[in-house]
Length: 288
Image (tube, rainbow, N blue to C red):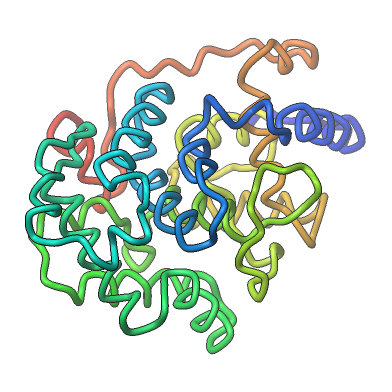
């Protein structure tokens, strides 16, 4: 495992990259731009959930398709979830982002409608469950069970990862970062105030995992929930109250030549997709 022998130098790099990328200039080219269309909490919750759900692949494509999905919802996502008619729901049929299609979008809308009816909204669910159990992985598991208690096609289940099966749950972790973290930077919303930022986990994907290993923050080879816990624990040693703010740092570490300043010169381009997590059905048909 590569890494920094000087923790002071690593801290300086993490802080510098956080300051550079945790700013509004970062928003337009990020999936986070989709919920930033709105000012109300309910619209941000729904738009953010869908933006996080489709957040894999090319970032420009994610952003473009996220905005397009909001237009299918008449640019009023909370009202659409609550009140869309069968005819309006059928209009989602033309939407597609990679393997997430219009049928999946319809099932997700109806699942969110059920949560709205039973709990008062997705944020109310997360806040109430966290208050009850005080453990974010348990809340993730409860949310997935409740979400798929609505009628749905089994194929859509692959779009909401299972922490109980050991998945990294990158998109849920990212969504929680958006909705929970609060600072004066104007990026993350901080709408869910009863969940502390200290409880969040790093949104771990291939890129973040590669950067974390290069910086000596992660030794586990698989990008699964155990790796999420390991890297988040490492980041807590730099900021116990808000470890996930370094998500901005790991993003920035991979661009702009920052690692080269510290003697790293690596190419993380894969030779083949390897299926290391059975819960990841996105690459299952084209992996080893």
